Length: 115
Image (tube, rainbow, N blue to C red; front, side):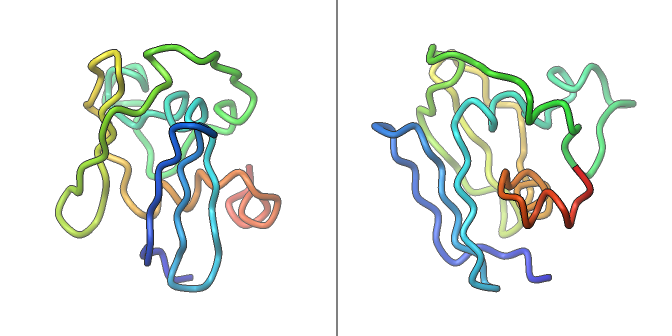
C-alpha cells in the first residue's frame, strides 16, 4: 500500500479533512475524529501508550463542535507527516502518513487495519 498523499484539503464549513492517496483512495476525516485520535504523548496518556496506529476506541468518540475540534492551521512536518493546529491552541500531535491512513474511517481501511 502506498501511504503518500497527492492532495490534502480542509473544509471548515463541512468540518472535513480530505486526503487523496497515491493509490487512488480518498480518505475523509471528520475534525472530531482527528482530534480524538491526536497522536501526541499528552493525548495518548504518555509515551508508553504511543503506537504507530490509532486506538480502535477513537472511532466511537463523538466530539462536539468546539475550539477543541476546529482546525486553525495544518503544517507540513518534513515530507512524512502533518501537524494540526487546533483553535484551542493544541498543536502537539504529529500525524504521519501511515497513522493517517490507518485512521481512515472507511470500511475498506477499517478492515485492512483491523479496527
